[in-house]
Amino acid sequence: MRLAWDLRCLGLGISVELAQGQEPCVVVRRASGPVRVAAVRRHGGWVFAWGRGRDHWGPALDGETPHRIRAAAW
Image (cartoon, rainbow, N blue to C red):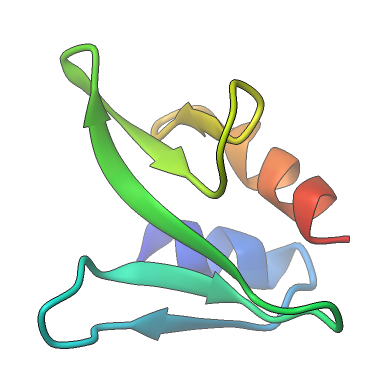
């Protein structure tokens, strides 16, 4: 929920998706299609992942991660 609030404060339209049988995620709305952000356990800690590749994830407790997600959504 903290990530959803941070992204909203950055001016993004978001929703929290709690689909049955799937991992919960924050969905960022954009014209070219949604960006889904999930919390994933990686290397003994939690990260947010929003795509594939090295530059599509960031530490969950890093204040810069919401800004990186916003950049990817624009």
